[in-house]
Length: 119
Image 1 (cartoon, rainbow, N blue to C red):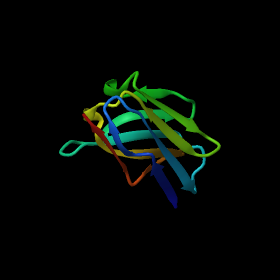
Image 2: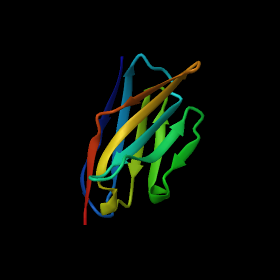
Image 3: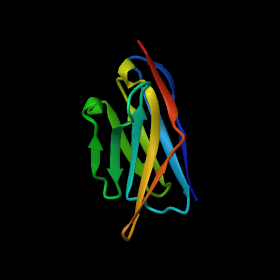
Image 4: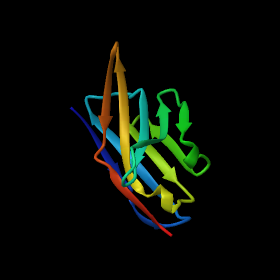
C-alpha cells in the first residue's frame, strides 16, 4: 500500500509564494517519476511539473520561471515551490508518483491540496 500525503496549500495574494510538499510512504522506493498536477473548477486536470529519478524536469509553459520542482530521494518527498502566484494558478493540486516494475506501471495520486490565489 502506498500513501501520498500532501501539505502546503492555502490562500495567498497574487504575487505571493507557497511551497507544496508530498511525502510518499509504504511499499515504494525511489519512484521513477514524481510530479504535480492541478485541476481548476470546470477544467481538466493538467500537468504542472514532473521530475524523474535522474532529475530530468518538465514544466508546463504556464508555470515556467515561476515554479520550481525538486525531490528528496532519502525522504521520498517531492516539493513544488510556487512564486509570483497568479489568480489563474488557483486549483486543487495533486501529487503523482509513478513506479515502473518490469512491464508494469504503478501510478499513485494524493488526495489534493487547495491553492487559492486572490487578486
